[in-house]
Image (cartoon, rainbow, N blue to C red; front, side, top):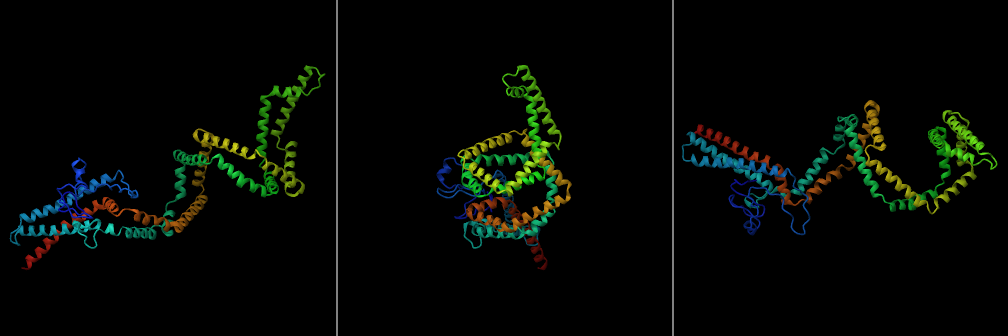
Length: 471
């Protein structure tokens, strides 16, 4: 690893070039005013030749900062080598026991240490001096082996059930999730992501897809299944749980509102049923009285849970549920009605139309952050977060299930996931990978050169001192 001040410039495929000469792939480009790179620079990865696959190693904005830091540290390390050489030349010829003799020996040892560590660092990424010395350019030659070793290291020491479970147990995932979801901006972020995914999913489902699902999957399956017993059992469960009362209340409330808003229309409807010979004023009185009776009757049904109409409706639904399960005649009629409905030529178009209306309504609600959809989802998430924070048993159970799922995925797919490392490294170009790795770790490796220079000087000084004392 050298820079613009290194004594030599190693190259992977050719001889070294002096540091003061520019290096260019084409002299014509150099004379044309293209940028000139010195031997010590680490240029960005070159574009692949025509027909070659695109590079898997992309430059990031931080690469230029790393390149600058690497160049600076190279200058520092090489400057120490040059300084030691100058001191060695200036102090040569003095007696070994003199002060300058000690300085000369220290400078000589410093040069040896600097050159040795320069060779060691350079040999990681390229052939020093361009000479194919055995066991040099290790990153280029053993790139694939390094990738497989890294894969094995990650698989053995990181992607194991014991490591992952220990980490998850100390993370308190449930409590952290509850705290995170308790903030409105985080819930908004979750809803935004869910809405984005839902919009993409809805956008990918076209009318032709719905037609295919309905005609090739849904309708044939419904035609084969006997739905009467299933519908009867479902209806029986609803009646037993009184789950239909809410729907009845809703219908009665809407009916009451409609009657209240349309008195003239309802009175006219009653009056039109009067005999022709009846006076108009009598028709009006009868219409008004009939309207008041209807309004009073609906109000009584709404306010009285034990009203005869409600009881009769419960009995009717209960009888229908039993008949759908037990009465063969009713079941046959229900199946015949099902067949007529499923074979109706307009059924598929109706389903597609309903789907289109539902999709448009959902998309419109997703677009409007003030819609009831956003408010309800936000409320559900807030309730979940509060429950997760308050109920320790629920939180512990959720964390246990989550940890089990993660550990299973790691145990089952960890080796395949780590395999991405070796496959990716194998896809890299050797020269490009060497440059990229050098860019990331080269700056720190320059400290080896610096330390080698200093330690060499100190070691030489100690050895020289011992030799002088002995003689």
